[in-house]
Image 1 (cartoon, one colour):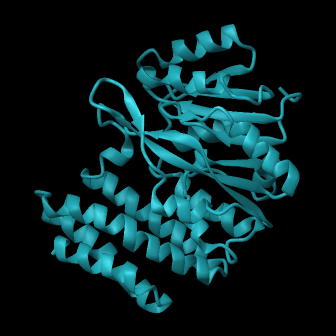
Image 2 (cartoon, rainbow, N blue to C red):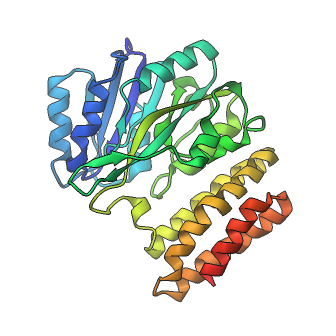
Length: 320
């Protein structure tokens, strides 16, 4: 494994319906110099068998099976403990990489010497015919990654804080070790706080506007982001956003914190308010309302722009 350039950590729990596509996207990479650690999070379906077959057919795949269901954060950490290559990235087992993703990201880091690089991504949505179709790059993703920037910082490019997903980035292994970065375990939305820690602690990072990953919206509705009407999932979502924002606030990155507040007001609060408007639980609405007021207070303190405030006003009107 040490002769490869990149390790891709691929965690999965009960994703047999999607895992073949994820593994095929690795085999199709224009950069062949990779290895993948397939972490089976004690799946109860055929995920483990799919991982095992892949490893038997291609020595670049290595399988780790966790003895009990531990969650995405623990699965990623188990993979991180085994990385020996210069670069490390992530791919959830229900998503796919575009063919030139690893080549583009490693070439960027080789040239820049930065700690990590982040690329754009799009949603992969059911097309109504049993398949999936790719969407467009969303505005907040474009703001985070377009135009390309080399050797930037989160204060120079605060809009990057909207890119909070693990699988859109490739990092130097030493960056993770030097900063003792680990994913929170036993939590949902575990990559949000890690992303903000990466931005806060990086000497320099790069962004590229090219799409590197397709993020699947599962047809069966079982993705975490498709379950935000569940009160516990809502609580985890709000706590993750708050924790990530606090990283920026407490590490001396006020411009990034301001940008992140604006992103939450513009992107997240309106979406959640639509769910809350028709939700049968008043407690759900109160939980979201408390969070919305805290974001509004932060917006006042950070002097967030009028457009984002307008989105928040509309969301509040729907919520109350």
